Image (cartoon, rainbow, N blue to C red; front, side):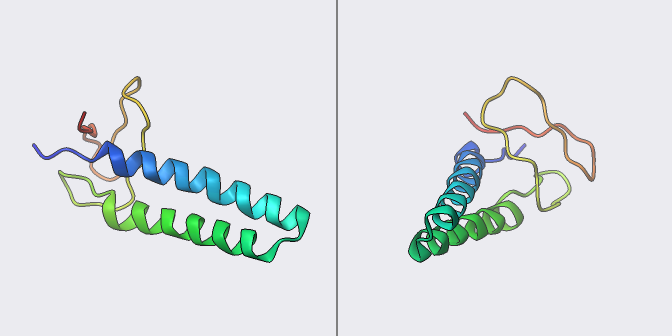
Length: 86
């Protein structure tokens, strides 16, 4: 069975958090380049979520990312458990 890459799941989480933080800080301090970079990072997290994060069983795009393997996640569409590498 093919596994989902944990690298891309972690990249998705990190880009989302850093992107939102940069947009908020840039808006408060009124720094346009910080807002633009934050928005680009946030939008790139959507690209990773809907292009890279694919269910190996049914092919549904948009799997929920998972940083560690403490809790089992399941595909929203088919209900199969998602298995990450490493």
